[in-house]
Length: 284
Image (cartoon, rainbow, N blue to C red; front, top):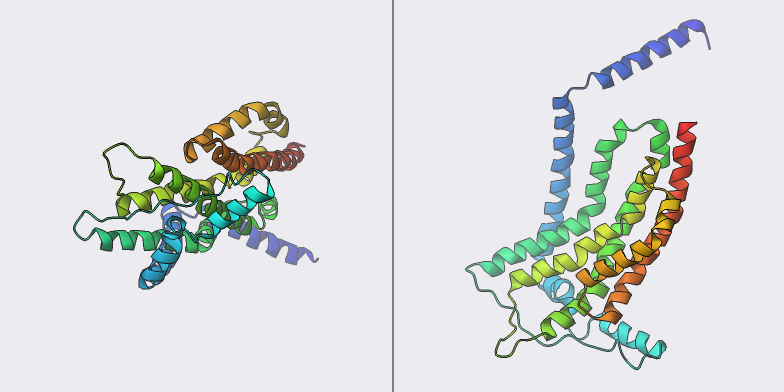
């Protein structure tokens, strides 16, 4: 390459880096604002679609785990037969009726439920917008390492939400609606049902992000595969405790929830080992 061309390239690169360094806080704030606006537009758009088709959304999706023909109940019953445990997993939700006690509560709850579904449906795009804001601040090697992070994170989040919806929710509804106190009728409100459905699904979506979190912590040298192996027994106790919090006090249910969480932990050990190697290379 000619010397003058090299000088031009260096000057241009220097100007570009200088412009990036001189980007003010307000410029970053403005950029973040547009990412947030586009994310909100996606959530609102999907929420409006769910609200328009609210009859299908509530009957088929939101209230699905409360119906006897929900796919999970048949699956668990067949699984118990396959495992030869005498139909221990054969159950169905007890019949109950939701109620609205406040003025316009049905309308408000329909909007909230629609936008909850809108957030879940728009999560891949929302995460993409967040990542597009973070990406310019990464070094080239970090960008290379984190390639495909949007697909991985959104896939894990979707798997977690589906796990909470098809596994945690049916067992929790069976226990909570079947638990009664003498002289007290169990007639939940629509607002409490929506709240609990969020508790059954959203935390599971975040928990399934564990491998990604471990990977980045290992790249920073904060988590090691050796340390995770060393505290494996402690993690098993923590997983069972978490399963007990997320599910009713039923041993079968807790193990059903705890096994996937333990698999995620073991998977995270291998991911931590890879991140640890990359951290060591960065120190050399």
